[in-house]
Length: 377
Image 1 (cartoon, one colour):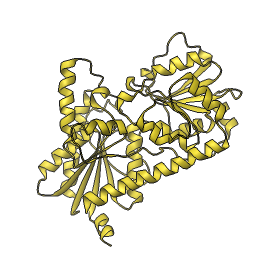
Image 2: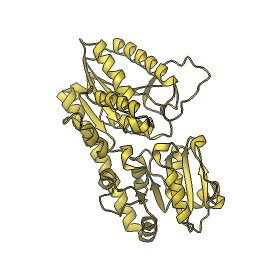
Image 3: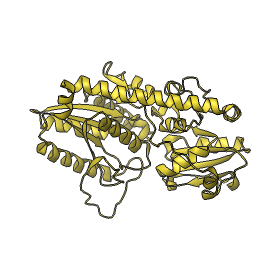
Image 4: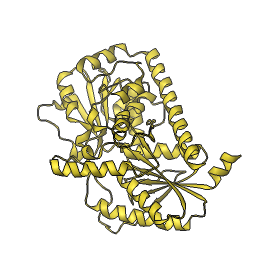
């Protein structure tokens, strides 16, 4: 009874300073998080930029767009983000004033979101507002900073932001360890869950639709094309493995730099990448690939998306990736790993991987439920 009353009297403001909903990892993580909140019976609304699709059954409030000539934002830094962050703060302030709920929880994603939430808590100091911050990667790495002086300044800002929320959640164990350098307690690993649903597809139709060969294994990279995703490592893998066909899917297309020595008949590029297209590609994939490096401090939605279809994935040997895979198949970004996974993939392995995905989803739901019960009671 007490828990039902708590949910009834609490508004969760999910602050997402990103293009929502879009085919980006950050957007998918926010989407999965909000779906879990709604499944648990909480009142949740997403406050976000004026770009992206509005998913069904999810309440989305967007800030105003005074820059009518801009209809989306690129990945990474863009000057207009400062303006949209201010407008998003203004939108949040208006909605907090209008809220009749006794308790308000601002679950803020990304560094900008946490700063926006913290400012709201300061402005409405007499209200019962709790801030939880969800971090998806290291700030210095995301901004691609090379100047040592600037890097040092940004690192200090990053460390300060980690101290603002009552609790930090992270998308990777590596990022959790990084944050614990600045605040020892109140840091929790919140695993990613699949952003696609499991569907049965006609494989022959998919081969024809995307002009893919059906007589060789298909290896899929599905993710962002920005520098921090280490996409350049995919081209090295293609050079070393010429007996498979590669699908490079994601975006934005203009950020994908294809070396001249890569044979055009060895791969295809699909961009942009919708959730339905991703589902279709995963249903025919023999193996997936994620070359993202450990120092990015990011999690990997690619892993759980592949796993829901029972597809093994070759990736870097990190604590987070090993937590996801639980020794179901060997990980390691190498030619040998690729060949091994193509050889050992069978019905039993596929079913074990799917079962592990269910366990990850249960953990994700349990972590969120535990956090909200602790900080909202």
